[in-house]
Image (tube, rainbow, N blue to C red; front, side, top):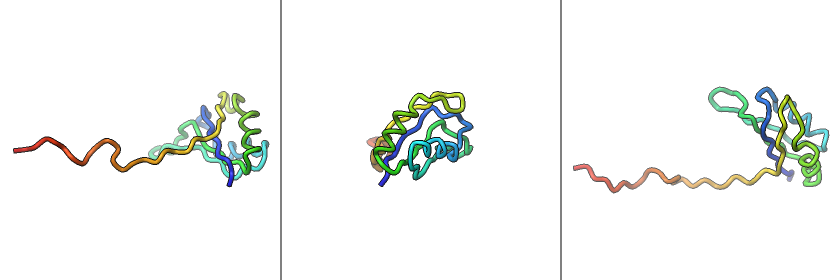
Length: 100
């Protein structure tokens, strides 16, 4: 299983294909995705890349963090696992208010 990398501060014109091309220079890039807004399809300015090994991921982070891409300095770091979201979310369910 590959190592996932977070890429932030992307230019809104950067595509997933361009991201994959950039990271392929560092090793085997298994996937590259620029995250887009569901409603508009516009880039949200960040994405995720999966490299085939931890060594390649480390090289990509070291070599590409702070590099200028599309006129912006990108932030490249190891992706954190997304925390599980509970169904409750602090809202809803029980209310102590009674209507008479």
